[in-house]
Length: 246
Image (cartoon, rainbow, N blue to C red):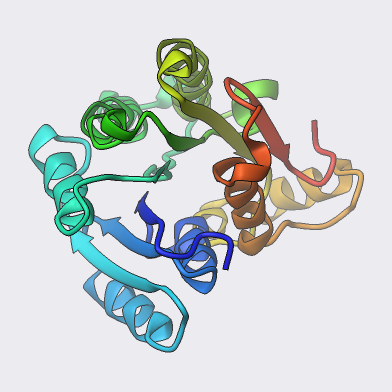
């Protein structure tokens, strides 16, 4: 019950890695608000799965790439206590393609969806942490930001921005008792990799030290560690969870 009664927001929190993160916190007693954009069925399924857990999960439908959407999620999470303990920025998309053939729409969509929520959610989330001079923010990046991946210039650029944003914000908020870190997953078994070509997936697995795809719950463990008091002297860092790809 490490996170008993902690107020937690997870963006993109009803599917894939975000779902695993939401459930991990709820199993440890947290009161989780899971933001999602469109999939109502996944949201209902998650709330149902959390019904018997020590904590709770409430799914909130909102576009957190906008100020209004981010505010609605943060306010929903903090409405009873007035504060926020943990913010996990996980919302993101992938639209691969080689740069000469990449459409402007795919470039804009990935940059907007993967970066704008950082600004809006952190801006309003931090305001719910400042009064108590404590809190933890964990941003989801990717090994693509560290190594580069052919066909992912848009995705790599967005996830590289997540790392730079994390380091800069950690400098701003450290004196106020708020820690900011990042997790960079490798190839994880989620719906997102279903759109990848099998040969590309096999090549990544072959190059990984552990020789397998990771699980979403393994990423959730890393996020929970950075959000916990056990990581109380860690800020501005990126924890790579990739089975040895990098």
